[in-house]
Amino acid sequence: MLPKLWFTHINSVDVGEALGLNHALQWVAELRLDGMDFSLNSKAVVDAFNDVDNNSIDFGNIIIHCRQLITNYFHDSKVQFSRRQVNRVAYELAQAAQL
View 1: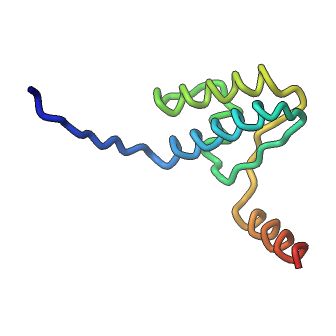
View 2 (view 1 turned 180 degrees about the horizontal axis):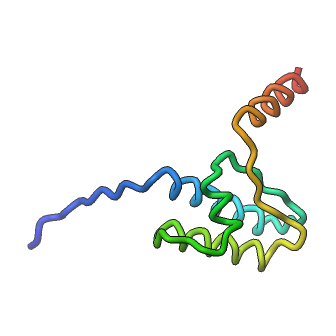
C-alpha cells in the first residue's frame, strides 16, 4: 500500500481574484440576473479580462472562462475596476443606511 502524499499548491493573488470573479459570475448566472456590472478592486484581473492577450496559463484560462460566462449569460454587463477607497465609501454608506 502506497503512503498518502499531500501537496500544497499556492496560487498568486491574481489567480485568487480571478477565481473570485469566476465564482461571482457563475452565481449571478444561476440567479438568472442580467445587466449586471461587476466591479473589482484588482486592476490586474480587470485589465486581463478586458485585454485579449494573456500570458499566464492558469490565470489566462480562468479569465477566458469568465469571458465565456459574460458572453453566454449576460448581455448588458461589464467588468470594471474601482479603487479600494471607493469600496470603503460604499461600505460606509451601506452601514449608515442600516441605522
